Structures are given as structure tokens and as C-alpha cells.
Length: 141
Image (cartoon, rainbow, N blue to C red; front, side, top):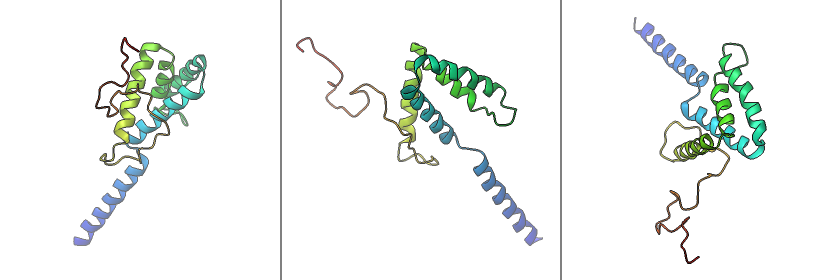
């Protein structure tokens, strides 16, 4: 009876380890989405991003088919959002915030926090500028 409970515990540990390997963490998914947005913003021309985004969203809707996945839906939406100015600003703010959260040293369970790109924020904005003058211009300049 005692050996059966040990076997059950071993089986439970094995299943938890297998689940951790098969199901990616939220930090991993966000890290990959941030990478996709940064790459598309630098390397893909504006009109082509929408052309890439539409099939990605369709693939996300058809994620029950093999090879396609649900990750394609937010990736496609983000590609299209890069071409619409109000959505672009909002999305890039979200990406900057996620990069900051992923790069924090005290976040447990992240995948390393490297996203392969610089933050696209304005100078002096939440960068530790204590003078409050960065990014501002005066009439004398």
C-alpha cells in the first residue's frame, strides 16, 4: 500500500513535468509576441504588414487544424495594428510595458527575458531621469 502511494506521487510529478514542457508559460508567449512586433516594425513595410496579418488571423481562427495555432490570432492582430496609427501607439506602449516586465530581474518563471530589441519609448519617459527636463523643450531653445 505504501509503495502504491509512492508510485502515484512519482506519476503525478512526471505528469506535472510533462505539462510544464508541453504548455508554454504566459511569459514565453508574451516574449514571442513582443519579438514578432519588434521584427515586423523594423523589417516589414507598412502595407505588407496588413497582408501578413490577415492570413495569420485566419490561421488563428482555423487553429483546430494541424500546423496552425491560436498564437496566430494575436500575432496577426498585432501586425495589422502596426498599420493603424492609434492602435500602433497603444500596442507599442503595451509592448514596451511587457518588455520592462520581462526584463525585471525579480520576475520568477520567465524564460530569460531577452527580447532582442530596444524599447521604443521617448527620451526621458520612465527612464530614471530625475531632472524632469529630458524630452521637454523651452521657448529659449
